[in-house]
Image (cartoon, rainbow, N blue to C red):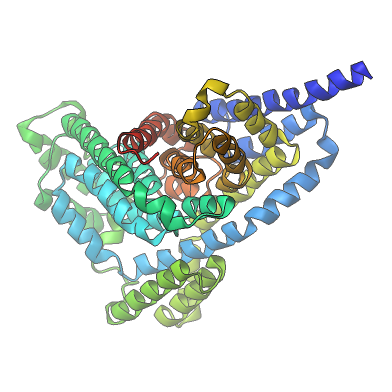
Length: 487
């Protein structure tokens, strides 16, 4: 009996260790580029499932994970088609032109503009929508000026993470549901702290933009537009060379260095596809249908916020309607679907691969034991400060877990422990949302694969860049909440 008891004690601890080891192995391998994210998401959890001794149940865990993420995958598939069509027909061209005028080909303005655009578009509450619009608008500038694409993905993810705390964004609603609170009681008092967090993202964007400006210098808008037209007309090669000679050489009056190769030809000699979306003469434009497409998009986002129908159904209907009205001929519809098939396949494949990871984490019980171990190791002396503890824990836990797992599995336990020490549930709930700036770059968040996929950035590179800055942003929000007496 004693031996059996000791085995029962050791088994949860083993699951805890293996859970942390599995996550660490995944992160190390993708950041070192030893495995692709899809392969790592599938093979590593399968291997650890065998280590746990539950290899025979791997199929059940994967099916459960796929079942849970299938609606998300469907939503992303049809959302990519819908917004891809809207970009093709020119709905967002005015936004792109406005950003071009604001940014003036200045790397500092471009990075700050990325943060502003991501924050504004995040008002719809959907991360994948935010990333598709932001990358579509900003990618041409980053590509043309040879700016760091991980700066774009990192800034966009952090801005969206702060705005993801809106009541219709997900985390706040989950916290309210789990603790039986009103979402407005959680969100409204947190507005000053979240505003500080957003200002922190803008300040970071300013610093990163200055760094990019120092590395690359500044072109004028006219020079960029000239290079764009030359790229479209000449097929990329001569325009790139012209950019190297006439554009990069005039950056802040300097020659040579990092700035001098900003207009260099593409590695594979292909046209610079970055500015193709700005081509004012592309055949997919539908100027006569501009207001129809604008109203359709507003109606779609309104229906999504008001929850009139499930989001996957809304995007399925929206994509079908957008294709039918804008491209009534079947060959044109097939061409548009084919044009966006690569993004659809990359993102949906990544989501289903992530289903293996989440399915094994949850099915084996590793995630539950990891959380219980963390909560159980909180010192009694920290009881009166459990809101602060919750805020700190939310940063790593919402990165390593889904929002559902954290808010419905961990938060009630923290709230119950807090009430025993006189800390109200609403304070715990407010503290629980501060980890969202980091959460939006979690490998378990499907929208992040839209971001890195459209930006053509390796997930490991994005992770290596963003983790430290996103964690800092989360701590800024938590610190502001404490300073203002909100948490």
